[in-house]
Length: 367
Ligand SMILES: [Zn+2]
Figure 1 (cartoon, rainbow, N blue to C red):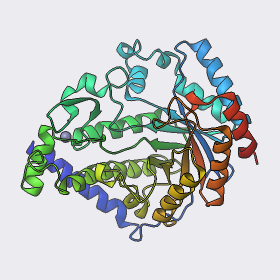
Figure 2 (cartoon, rainbow, N blue to C red):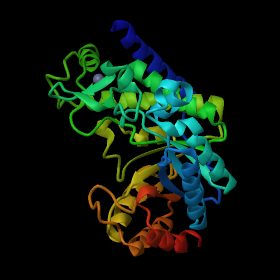
Figure 3 (tube, helix red, strand yellow):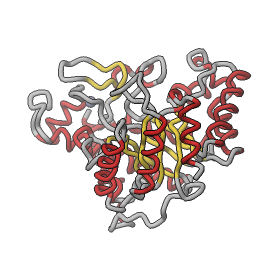
Figure 4 (cartoon, rainbow, N blue to C red):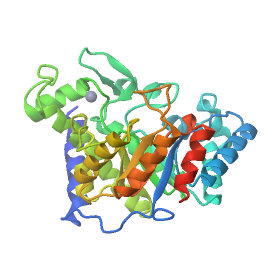
């Protein structure tokens, strides 16, 4: 425990300081490079077909339709299980798409169509055994809630071995697919609700702040602690990406507004201030144009020009599912994003995209 803790403090803080040292103002001087100066992306997900022939058809049809609609980037989901299955036969049954390298096929098809591909990766969440390798191999990494129950879908970001593992996962994709255009982090904070009270975190609380988190769950020190460990991951990742491939864009998604996710460790504003992100994607999910404009404006004001903001808009989302936003509303939101000076838009999500929405978006995206 003591050794792990020393690694966390010394390794994490040391890296953070050295990463910032050459850039004291924290300003990122190079604007991100999007194909036509504007990012028009979609959260693409994974290839759903399991077998190669059907999968290649799915990729071809989707890439063609999206390119024709004016999209110029795909955020393609990459999981730890997928990467493991590329390397080890024993995982292939759980993710047969790895057998024919579905991720690589999407990358190839998108590039042939002139579109960017960003690896879409979640470092701490979506770690259920059926789709991730972490809790299959390391059940002790599970995040633990206030009632002492281990999560079946989230790992504890505070453990240095977890952050190291997730860093190696992202770098594994980057090395396997050198043509990648970016890395897009999915909500890289703690799960909603009361986390984490695992043995490691409780011990960390005692050593760092002098009390057990479980005894004072509302103490703000817990939020500071979450920010420290989550930002440490992004600092390290940024540093490693710059070393390997400085062309890669690093982005991050979370809530809209002035950093309301800070208390769960999603501190994009500090990262932006230190030049760690190439762009931020707030999920401005709403059915009302006015609400979209308001929350988008709040996010842009919070960013204050330190980091480009690409606005996330939803065909559907948990608040309205299975209902969809109207095609007309989606068009109004794209127009609003441009009027507000956003660097682009990201549409949630390919799986929900119907022809009527694609056709409506094509009208405005191709402008
Ligand atoms: Zn923990």
